[in-house]
Length: 229
Image 1 (cartoon, rainbow, N blue to C red):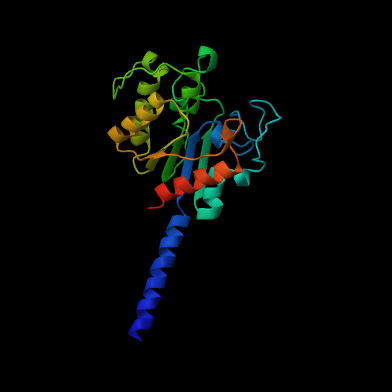
Image 2 (cartoon, rainbow, N blue to C red):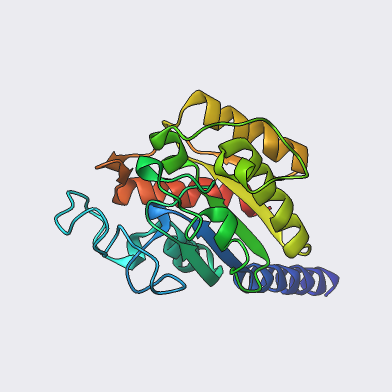
């Protein structure tokens, strides 16, 4: 009898734990890697997947929203998407392609619109690396507007503001593969300073510089392994 009672209690605890994970709400702050037309907030954000950004004829085998890394987290691991504020071509800092002012779409502008998540997944830095935006200095406070046009101060500002705006959320940074050493190492150092886990991806299959179906699956699993604890 005691053994049956113990087994029942263990099963009850397990079901409670699974239910808790299943109800975890997460939000994404991202760039093209996390877009899918019709599934981003606000809906006016440019999308690379199932969108017009970068042209309509893309040689990439991702053909449905169910194949994206963040959607896979909901279907394969039971998480609940709160907000996906991703914008194709966006940079962490305010400097964009061809030295344009991207302050209307930068990560540090959009960080205020992530809903009420329990987990925040930041997946950026790719465009900053591709463009070769000015790196700037490591600066952990007292940011001027001009300094936010450079990568390191902007990334510091991003992490600090996320901590302040979402004090109860678990925040994770995701670092893409094939970025410049300066951007990769800067994100690692800044994440350590703010005590934010940095998920450094590896072995991500890509087509036209963007995750393929296989790449999306790999991102999902690597992110899940980091956040499931």
